[in-house]
Length: 492
Image 1 (cartoon, helix red, strand yellow):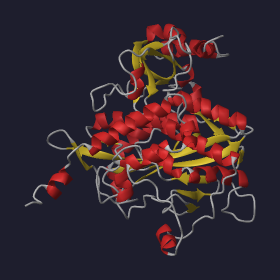
Image 2 (image 1 turned 90 degrees about the vertical axis):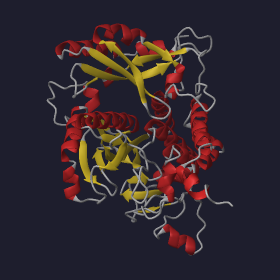
Image 3 (image 1 turned 120 degrees about the horizontal axis):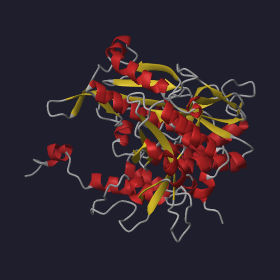
Image 4 (image 1 turned 90 degrees about the horizontal axis):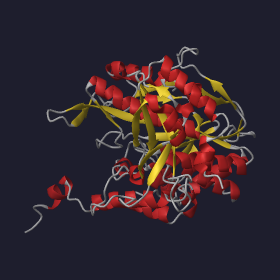
């Protein structure tokens, strides 16, 4: 039986792509390659190699300990999370179509990689590694598409984040601008920063469409065109790398922490989603010379056209088609468990507790209704709001697919859309489930939801649960400034 890793390396057309990469390496004088993958928490991991060894690593891959998928961090007991030192080493195979020259150092190119079990393992040698969240998303999306007559998920994300100053001790502190939403003057104060972000983003295939100053200190949101769920996740990961690099260049800090300041808005990462039949890939140059691209052409492809099953098909210009409603029914039904993925840190829940800043806390949906966890933000797309800037977009995409699949299979009804402020509706007697209000509660909801766990196949659920349970336990075993200020002098 041929191993998964060998099928991947020997796939039709791959050898041609490997050779094309070599031509680009030589023509652009690229000296070094980043071979990167994404950990359980969304952190970018990997290795670097001299470009001379491209052909060898494209064929054989590189090895790295399994624990790298868990950031190689330890738990409260000082033991490595997920995998001990006795575990085997994974094999990462670079994907030539993802090659991209770094615009800030053109001697370096990056590749995304698919992860496999080692070829010499006794159990499932050379099999796909289920600790690879990115690889899982690709396979689960393929399975979903095959099962539902070609239906595919497209997503556009709204990545809010904050640009902060450093204090005299070198620690991130205050926002670079004032917390005035949509004020062009505050946007202008960050112009040198965001223009550099736009420059790098467009060079790397992000079709940037709009941006604004949000309502927290130094908070910007810069958006690119929606696309296939996998490509969008890759672009969000790339965007985070770009922001980190720009921050280094300007001597400031790119903060993706969800809620660094109370009393102002947190950083969300709303996921605008739709399910489509058909469509074709189209090249978008993003300001680049088509004959001299800094990366492989696949980085600049966006899927266009097709039939959007979330578009209305009746007299009601707001109500989606039946197929779209069933998918949304699945997501509404599983919103509590999905919160453990979309709000993945202890700090995430500061966003839900700080009232008055439009953070959703109820498992309901409506039209243009920012008090619900899900809303129709425009004809043909739903905005999933219970997700923030710390999200792993690959696991989020996989679990959204699992919930949508359950909705379609079981024809789940999301109920009537709520057009009132949800608090007014509750005062009027409506029974609405509240979203989890702590990471611990969200993990309990995830533990009880086998459907959402299907979006975390193989070892992924075990690893995620272990990592996040340890994070919650660390928080619960910590004495905070609030504890001391509140209780230190209570008695006698």
